[in-house]
Image: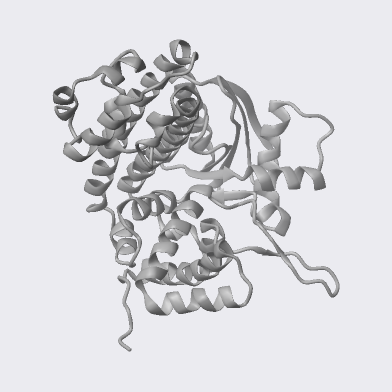
Length: 398
C-alpha cells in the first residue's frame, strides 16, 4: 500500500491569470500550468489538483501570494475544499529572494519559488516566516473586516473631501466659512446643499432657513447676520458648484458611514472577540469591530508578542555594539494600529491606573504617541490573555 504523500501547490497570483506549480515534499515537480481568474479556470484548477490528490492520498497545501487581495475568490474556494492555505508574506519573501536569488524573474519561476519555501521553512529560520498558514476564523469576523474596512475607506474619503471643500470656501467666501467652527457640522453641510448656486444662499428667507433640518433659531440668526454682508470672489462661478457637490457628497458619505456602523453594532453581538474586547474601557463599537475583524481568530498568534507586533504596539530591536535602539516593524497591520491608538488613548482617560502609567512615560521624556504605544503594549498582553482564556476585562479593586 502506498504511503500518503502531501501535495504542495504554489500559486503566483496575477490580475487575470495565475501561474501554478505543483510538487511533492521531496522536491519532485508534478505539474505546472496557468489558470484564468474565472469560474472555468477555478474548476480546471481543482480538477487537476483533485486528480493528483487521489493518486498520492495526502493533504493538499496551497501557498499563494496576496491572500485577500487579487487572490479572491480563489483563496476562499481553496479553504472550502478543505485544503490548507498558506499566505506568502511579500516583505519576507523579498528578503528571502535577496538571500536566494533566482537567475531570472517570471511568473513561472515565482510559482516554483513557493514550492522551495515549503521545503525550506522547516529548516531555515529565514524561510519560516515567509509562509504563514491562514487559520479560518468565524465568518462573522470576516464580515466585520469587510464592513470596517469599507467604513474606514469612506471616512478617509470624507476627510479629504471636507478638507478640499474648506479650502475652496476660504477662497470663495471666507465669511461663510467663518459662521461655523467646523465645516463638518451637519447643519452647515445641509445649508450648503440647499441651492445649486452658492450665491443664492445669501438670498434665502429666514422662514426657508428655519425649515432646514438641524437649523434652529440660534443658527438661523448666525446665517442671517452673514447674509446681510455676504460677498463672493470672482471664482464663485467656477468653484461654487464644486463646493455644493462636495457638501452633498459629504452628507451622502455620512449616511453610508452611519449605516455601516449600525451593521457593525448588530454583527458584534455574534462575535465573541468583539464582545470580549468591548469590555475594555475606551474600546467602543467601531474600535472593537475593527480589531475583531482584523484579528479573525486568536489561534493565528502563537504568543502575545506576535499579537502585539501585529497590532503595531511593539517595535523590533535595532542595536549595534554599545548603541541600543529599536525600529518599526514592517509587518504591522495599519488598521489595527490605528484602532489600538484610538482605543488606548480613550482607555487611559477612563482607567486611573492606565493614566498613571501614561503620565509616568511622559515624565520619562516619551512623546504622546510613544507613551500610548507603551500602554498599548501592556494592553496587547491583556487582550491576548482575554481571548485565549475567553475572559472579559476586569479592574482590580483598589
